[in-house]
Amino acid sequence: MTSATQPVSADDPFEDGVSRRLRIAFVGKGGAGKSSIAGTLARLLAAGGEPVVCLDSDPLPGLATSLGIATSDAGIPDEAVEEAPEGERARYRLATGLTSEAAIRRYADTGPDGVRFLQFGKTRGHVAPLMRSQFAFRHIVADIDDTPWHVIGDLPAGTRQPFFGWAGFAHLVLVVAEPAMSSMLSAKRLARLGEGENAPLVAAIANKTRRDDDADLVSQATGLPVWASAPVDPAVREAEHLGVPIIDHAPDSPTVQALRSLLERLHNEERSSP
Amino acid sequence: MDIDGGVLVADLEAGLGTLSRLEAGPVDAVVVVVEPTAKSIEVATRAIDLAAEQQLGEVIVVVNRVTNEDDEAHVRSALGGREVIAVPDDPEVIAADRAGVGLLDAAPQSPAVAALMTLTDRLAGAAA
Image (cartoon, rainbow over all chains, first blue to last red; front, side, top):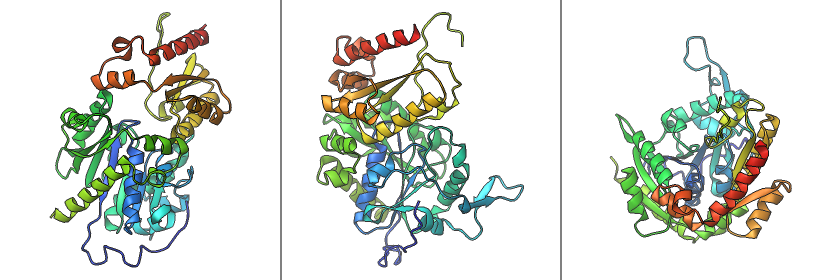
């Protein structure tokens, strides 16, 4: 991780309190395209001059590649946390005086378009060595609402992390689903993240669609509204093969176009929300 | 687990979590499924290394969604020249997934099933 400390751009869109911050978590079954979509959306947002931090809570690599950042196993340094006093629920807390905002500035890598990238580290087997980093990550995320960043989170495949509170920062959960039965069944389970008091809004992205009615199929099978639909896209395949971001490889591809439309919708939704 | 001479096939969750908790020698073979993408190859490399480190059994690599010979060669090269079994990107697989039915029932003569027959032969060899 770098120690970049540059401030959010001088023309921070949040200084005047007009713009709203996006807090989005991407979830879904493995292979659905979460990381590609999350990374591309983050880059589109950052390219517009907005401050964006991407959260990667997957212990395996993926999101960094979609952003255009070199893969690294490094997590948040041990210095970020200290032993919590006896009686506190968590074993570690953020180091005295360290806020979420300061931690992001200090420990998040900086990628293309100025997008920031925070991960708790990658594993080659056991996650125990990443324990302190995981605590740091979760404390930073817990208070992220107090920061001026748009937040795009990419969770690991499946239901485990989403239902254990790792998407708790999100005002909006986007479930990425392919028009395949196993992908849609997982998405239907993840739709339950929208149940209960103070639950986030949950919507679906139909990815790798092949037919005109695939978005409807995903909506019917998951019970979720579909906010974006991206077709099977050879440009995505090429970018994934090469290990480069789709937005750099094919900025006018159908997938990037679909995500531009999604971003427009997200901005409209935020502006119209109370 | 006593399977009384039968065959046990376990589909582990994505990632390395379950693999890291297996003890040495409980399986005849670990099948690592990889797609011809940079991310997938990176994860597969970690899985192969971990399986070897844990001494879990023979590692067999299956490259899925192969569209051309370059895909297979790309993965083989990235994995240090390791032998791989290639499964083609098959419309029959997509149709079966969409319908929620088993590929073997929906399209037993499909190219993907033919490729997987190679895998079953390899697994039989690993268990012998």
